[in-house]
Length: 135
Image 1 (cartoon, rainbow, N blue to C red):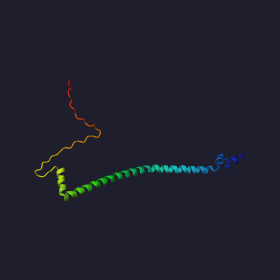
Image 2 (spheres, one colour):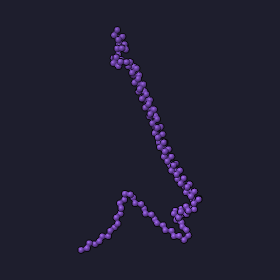
Image 3 (tube, rainbow, N blue to C red):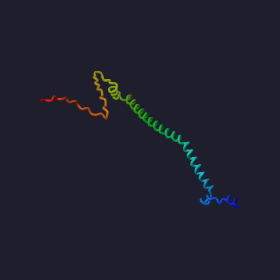
Image 4 (cartoon, rainbow, N blue to C red):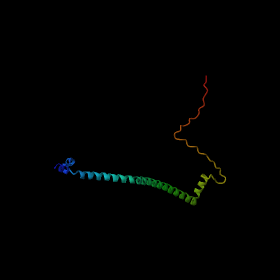
């Protein structure tokens, strides 16, 4: 009779303390751990894909900015080409400024531009001549 009590599930102390079936509780814990492991595995699997997607989107945005800049440059060149074809005063302006050409009999005077001083440079003070001390 002592062995019957040993195999009786009601005599297990864990069952009485938890107030329910230990196997059902253990199954829920195992299911929760399994879900966490599966989600972690999926996250680790897709993390490089997510990084690559973000990198590709950044590259796409950079290329779109470059395309927009090139489109603006193309529009500017088309405008300049149209002005060169249709506006003789513009052609004369370009010839005078960029090609340093002039009309017959004109003298062209060109001034070299000064190099820009760095913003953090100090201003140079003019030299003052030292006057000899008078006695």
